[in-house]
Length: 430
Ligand code: DAH
Image (cartoon, rainbow, N blue to C red):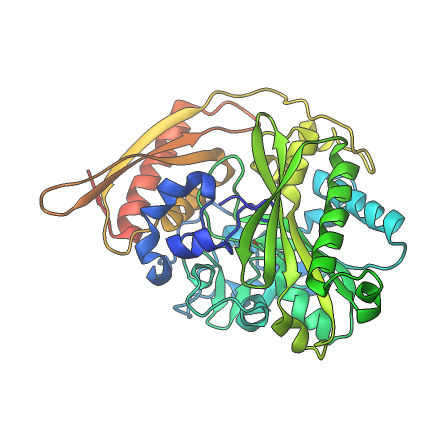
């Protein structure tokens, strides 16, 4: 799925119908995995780990122990060590990192257009309750985004937030009326150059009172929708200059009407955010039944990839100086110069899948072994034989962004993938 807001919009109607969190662009691939999505069991934990085990992380001054988040004792838990280690990174708080630079540029836009009207929050813990992440924003009980296949669960009532919308309701309840919330969000997903299981969003929220719309002579919803579009078109121009953009009607559980903004980039329309006029039920929960509000969620990686010409989402996590040294605080116009494109190495793997197989589980196994050395996982063939057994063939693209990989090391990774896939996913290798 392709939310800009959101790497992928798991909350659109299309994704509800497909029971898949994958983007519209990867629609057909995603649909073949959909039927088991809600019920896919968490992967068995493994003893062999490629990632060094981090025993605790610091999330904005609060220490969180690994054993409270990566729990072998809870059957619902599906948080791997690779994800736990990302919890305290807060790339959005680094002023010289592309994600931090974009965040600051958006702050500047709001400051110059609505001086001091928007409060900013960027340190809210990504570990939230299912109530915050789903119920408070009216995500239906059977919505795909609640599945273990799509979301990282710490236990049955605690998740790693999959969107910054998880904070809307609590901030409203605490009396905030206009705010921007920036944070890292977590989604189990497939693997390619624009999808990574951790990315960053910024949520915007703005409440209006009857005085605001009364004198306009417009109905409150229309007033809020027009104000929202004006605000976001201005933001897009602030970031991108004169770009071609278009609004697309969509669906989110928390807004009505709902829209996506797309920007024309590299000969294609790219979804950059989701937004809409907030459902009255959400406002009512905070005693705001006489008000109207708009909200948006935008995806900072997507924005940064467009703005800085960054070709692969894994680069945001790189410590390589050849990447980090290219960006400076407040420097918005810089175009990233790739230091070199190292050769890819392709490996195919075919297996008979079982009922519980999902692509997200497969990708998690591959990432668990190859980490950021895996660039893409693509389904290249699928068929069902006369006995009703279904075979999938995936092509895994291994490529480092920092060096050439040796044949030996790639063969070793692939052989580990074969072992683990068989052991963890209940599939039969062909
Ligand atoms: N939370 C949505 C997502 O991650 C994005 C979004 C859409 C946020 C509409 C909003 C909104 O606040 O009003 O897919």
